[in-house]
Length: 293
Image 1 (cartoon, rainbow, N blue to C red):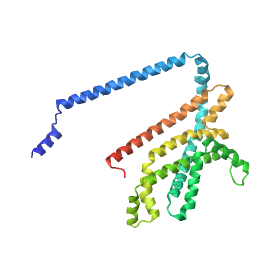
Image 2: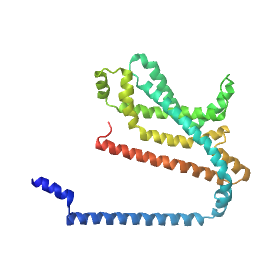
Image 3: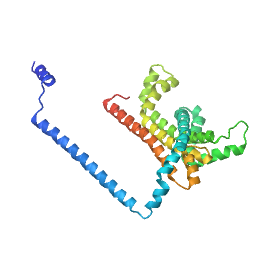
Image 4: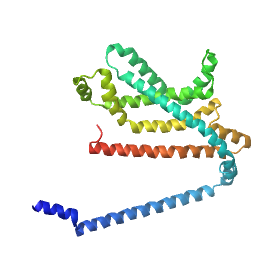
């Protein structure tokens, strides 16, 4: 009866104690003080950087060469048209990387001596393309494949550049998927097998769903990196955002278009980065509450 009355009081007419009110006032005051200190320190830092940069001996020439509003307005439409190619590469290569990376990860985790050649090939592929710099991979694929003059093989630089991006990033994504697969406790496989599921169904319905959920944040980070690296296809002559900026800069001897292209990529990357942070925090909360297996 007493417990019921206390619960009713907490629900209907709860009055916080003086100590709790004081603690909440202290927390609010501390939050306001921390916000004010952060704002002041940010303003002071920005002011110091502005004064140092503006008063540097070469600032006037740098401003005219890299931060000219007229050239920025002139380059913006061409850079945005080139950006459409980068976005298409991101979508196509991103999907291809996820599929190929998953196949490689599954191949590396297959058990039994019969699958040793497949595991060895997947391991060699992953080690090779993780060690090979992306820029060298692009040069080899974009210029080496057309030199072979193979019948039926495209020489389109955009397609070849996308192939090179897929080859490199699938090796990284494969390791992410493999880490997720190996993080699933063996008892999960044993429980699935005890219920009569085959190895294939155990992998499909038990292991992979858990593995993919656990590696979503690093996968999103790889996609952010892929988004930026799509600009490297410009070395093959594909007119993307970077190459469009390069054309204008080389014609007018002004590097403001590079700044425009860089800011466009930053504007695209920041939302994806914040989304990755949100997904990571959400999954951490679910794990803390026992909501993710």
